[in-house]
Length: 447
Image (cartoon, rainbow, N blue to C red; front, side, top):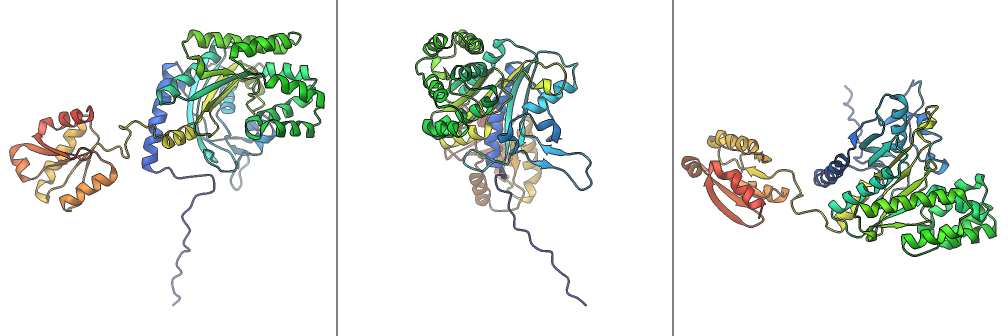
């Protein structure tokens, strides 16, 4: 008889750049998503869901070569279709608009879902992460772009951010600056990619990269002079209007920026939270007009949100394109920043459970079940302790989990129709009538 072969043990781990999100982290995530979803819907955006896997041809040719090398290909043995994991939520949105032409325009949708990119993992950057997108398709009005920025401001403000700036630029202006500098149309995509690296690698490195891309020295000098103009948004606008007066594309971009700035002022958004920045690019090639990006001042973690106008992207699927604009809220970085700066409100605890109902003895299990049910029907998230263990161990379990309240129903309490309630944070205990348990917990929660 041969000895039964044991299966090989597999080391429990996840691929690089991926992660498990355990319950305590998920509670924080669900809080942030809840705030974002609420603001999206307050602004009239409706939910949409698209598949995690798209046809490869749907994704390729939309983002530019630097981005497309990060797309994960997908498939299975014998599969007849070339498939890929979605890189973002914008291209699937455009596919939806092309596939369902009957959708009423303007079409305002939000989507909160994971995307995948084969990037080098680092702080605040993962290979699988969630995007929270809100887009308006079918309107060329700058009001749609201004509302996108207003939505961003509302979300970050409601989450407790105070030190952030929404940077605004326009691709038409960048085209005009390229023309002013003498850069040909074929060189513009490389120009964008180089300028986009300015905050990361600095002015000298960008100039070196432009030289490697065969941009003439005179063009580099003229362009850098414009990209480094400083001042208020209105001061930068005024200076660029003078310098670029003979370049229609630049003037159109400046007009769009000025219109958006006017709407932001009318909406009452404080000027310290937004800034016109001619050097801000956004790397994806499908942007056609205004682009925006939000940077938090501390910690230095990169952009929290980013987006812009992509008027030609839907046209890559159907004969006639549709104007579109929108933004992505970077939930992963937002959560990282909020944790680092301890920004989560006290009521967002380590567990969803609000009260633990203890198991005093086998004879009182029915009483404990009825109390648990009553608390749930009163709107509280109640959990019953299952094991027949000492009361001290049950209370220690609640404390380790971060459950704030413990309900003890012993024989004395059961006989008197009462419950002993412990507030673990305040180290208080009170005995109340069973019908008053929910009210006492609510009073504690309200302080």
